[in-house]
Every structure is written in structure tokens, then in C-alpha cells.
Image (cartoon, rainbow, N blue to C red):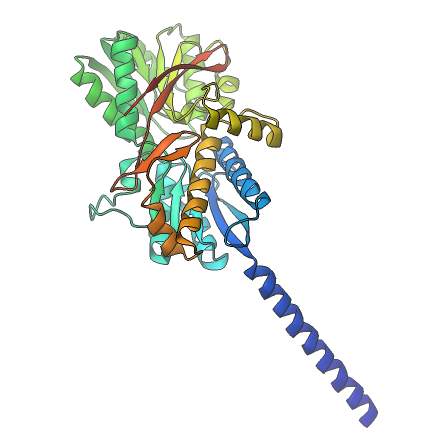
Length: 389
């Protein structure tokens, strides 16, 4: 019995020793890695956006790791799927900042989702930078009117984007009347519609119809019939590609040949698939960059992305690449992986040479940058013109 007990005791000691050393090894491994989170739309209605954004972030991290990483450590991206839903975006953010202990987060694509998640990363004092969320309320709390210290964006905001499309309608298309058809469940769509109308009317135009739909609607013919009856020169649809594609197809089936306009929510290869290439002809939307632009930054990024993923990067990939690169540069300047120090350095960003153009953050954490107008031709995006702020 004594020999058995002694042997058992030796086994226990060896087991505990192995656990201790394994734990130390695990801690060392964790200490050699800096974690960046991504709260993105990997599934659901905006899945192509989130997938592109994840690819852009992964490429930026792969490139910096190949050069030795940051602060002598390798970076790793932890992606949490928010399923294209605001409530899930909050859940994903909670996981990233409390369980995964990331030092910064690539925030959701949609404005509504960023706003739902913002209180969580704010409280945790971990910065979140959205590649594309364009509603002004993303970085400025509408209740307190104060800037959200730990929320940034890589995209221009809706007042600029809405004005860009209104000016394009008035000046380039010579439109005198417009109809607006918005996704009433989207803060992004509501904001764009508001600023489009404000500028279009200021230009001397008239809004002859304002209609709404909800995300995941599929039949738009009754409302389109009402809009058609007003005979507008242009139709502004500031929604996301899933519904916009159906709206375009159904509008063309009804004989509506007028120009259709939108914002960066149109930027998906799925748009032409859903609408059909012919239906989306005479469609124009504002965007953050064009892969056809012949700048060194764009050319280098497009070549690297095509080599990595065998596809042409959309604006969501470019903006997420920019957002991730800005986090990395802030980390280097802070010489620290402390989330607060990274945030402080990010806020100082000035004339950052991004793929999507030179970025300088203003006092509300919004980048001052240019926009491009994209024209759809037989299902393909073509660069139309560039608009400076």
C-alpha cells in the first residue's frame, strides 16, 4: 500500500509539474503575440462587405508580420461574426474586448452596428475604427453631443457623401427633380437621404417623392409604381446591395430607365448579380476609392490583394486595410500595445498616405479625404470622377 501511495504521489507531482510548465509555455506564447479584433459582417445581408474587410485587415497584418511584426511581436487577427445585426455586433465586441483581450478592433461596416457596439469598447477603453460607417452619430454621441473617445472611422461621413451625390445629380446629370427611396431600418440610409435632399434642394432641385422600405424586403413594385408616377429625373437609393439590386431589377422591368444613384453600400460584386448587369446600367454611386485609379498606393495594394485572394479589392477591403495599417502605425508611434496609448496616437493621425487617399483625423475622429464617383457599365464598376473635400 505504501509503495502504491508513493507511486501515486510521484504521478501527481509530475502531472502538476507538467501543467505548470505548459502554463508557462502558454503564457510565453501569448506574450509574443499582439491581438487585434475584427467585429465584422461575415454572414447575413452585408456578408460580402465584412468578408472583404476581413481580407483587407489580414493582408495588412500579414505584410507587417513579414517585416518582423510590431514591438518585436507578431500580430494576429481575431474575427468575430456580427451576422450583419446590431445586437450581434454588441455581443461580438463584448467577446473581443473582455474574453480575447484585443488591443484594438476593426469595427463593423454598418453605422447602426458600430453605434450598438460603441458603449462596450468605450467602457473597456479599447479603440474601435470602422472601415466604412459613415453616419455622423458613429463618432459623436447624439445624446451627449460629445465625441466618443475610443471610436474612429476610415471613411468620409454621410454629409460629404450625400452632398457629393446631390451635386453629381444636379451638375453632371442636370437633374431638376429626384425621388428618394430609403432603407428605413438603416441609420446609414437615413443619413445619406437627409444630406442628399439638403444639397439637392439647395442646388435648386425638387424632391418629388420620398418612400421607404425595410431590410430584407423583396417586393418593391408597388412603391416603385408610385415613384414612377411622379416622373423624377433621378432615383436616389442609399441602401445596401441586397435590396438595391432587387429595386434596380424591378424598376427596369417596369420600364423605369432613369439614372439610379446611391452610396458606398452599393459596392459589391453581388449587386450586378442580383440586379442583372443590364438593370444596373445608368447606375452611379459614391465610393472611397477605385481600383482603376493610377496612384502608386492603389496599384501596389491592388496587386498584393489580387496575389493573395485572386480577386480585385473593393472599397471595403481597401478601407479595412487602411484602418488596420493606421492602428499598426499608431502602435509603433506609441511604442506600446496599451490600448489607451494607441488611441491617443491614432487621434493625432495627419496626412497618412492611405490606399483610399490622404487621411487626417479632425476633432470628431472623422477623416478629411476625397471621394470618387463610380458608374456601372454592364455589371462592371468604372471610375467616373474624383471629388475633393
